[in-house]
Image (cartoon, rainbow over all chains, first blue to last red):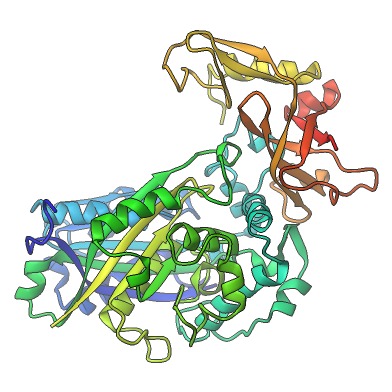
Length: 399
Length: 136
């Protein structure tokens, strides 16, 4: 493949993460610099080795977003006068996938050496009502849909209703997805719900928010921060790293902007995205050791898994109910607890899943949830009203 | 935030809703129906755009009933139902769904037939949204 296997591809060498949840006294910029330092140290680099910063947006505050855009992080990290560029990539929940593509391209072309990918969000500390209103401007056309009172939970409900109809999945099976994710979150010290068990009865007994979604099937908004460090593979070797993670496949499909224009709410763009990604990687879903796929609602995850070939069409929720994707099950999925149980950190939810995939392949997850011998991971993100389906296939390298 | 100039697209559509009619955009160059209304035809990129009435009949692709957590300004509408409708004319849109006589939406199902049933002019001016009811 052109540009591949040259030894100069972008690879992951470091991760940083702060616990997700409600941390009203953790300042936004403080989270960013703290998580940046963690990731750079984890990578074994000095901060001054970073020449490019790619920023993943926040959605809680236009003022904080402006700070990101206008390089405040560069100054806070003492990189002013040294950093080549600092800029934002933004496609909502699929931002991390698109950011990694940008980073990989910059490194492979020699236009960047060491890239810091940085994200923080304060959704958990923001007023919920304000965030509900803010989200009606993110992926909902103001002239044609916003006037109907469409909320994000209703977007999730439209997808869930269609998925349940198409697959014949029961409310219990849908609830079991949330339960499996909670089991994973219980093994993740950074997860919002690490200390709170969950049962199918709890989920189905919770208040109906937007039929068919119960309260405990709606993602809880959270504060959180994630950072990743990428460099070239040759540099990773030169630095004497014993492990790094390659991006071996990538594919995407933007299937709509308005939820009312999606041709099939139980399919979305995953199948098209998957074909390209697996072709590029030269391996298929049957070769994967784990998956980390966007899961702001259970059906968003089951649709993604089916489109990516990780479960037969219509069977993913039933397989969750059978424990196949839980800790100790056949195939590990969303091992950090996902957005639904680690916390929905906005655009960062996808970043946290991607970081978890990288962490697993580096062998640096806590022992209780480390997937033994994990070598290949399927990562997927989706933005806005699930407007796009973005896939990255990752492969761990050990020396 | 308003988007000056958008009235050319929104006003004919909203005015039709206030008359109790559902219309969709139509490209005279390539003879295709378009939803949502666009500045240029998304098929042939010509600007020869017009409006055509539709039957209002279609299939309910999916629906949701909002009971809690409405966006600001929609609290008094609760509970209300939203549906994605695929019109027989080959275009689709998001609309509101009328409740059944019991005030609920349990009679609706995915892939069931629905038909446009507009609200009165005052309500259509307040909220220019297409409303549908069950047709089976």
